[in-house]
Length: 104
Image (tube, rainbow, N blue to C red; front, side):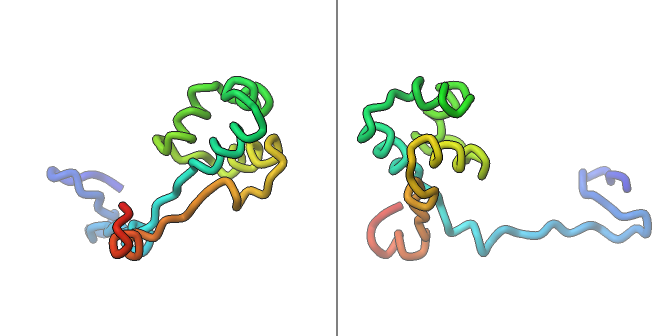
């Protein structure tokens, strides 16, 4: 498999490789603010929670501020440390209905 002059990936047979689009999922966004709310409700600091699950505090801050998408394992670790089901730590926002309701 090589690259053409334009940067497109081409199979050895000469056919260009098409990349799948993520259109069905691009309308969804995850919001992790309930994670921060639950942590504050329990009286934990970001540092305390980060130490409990073995990550850096900045990583936890980026997740809580919705700047990075955590792995499944990290989300599960946070849920266990906070003693709450994982599905209560995240809100799935459907972009199609959010736009109608005025949320983006």
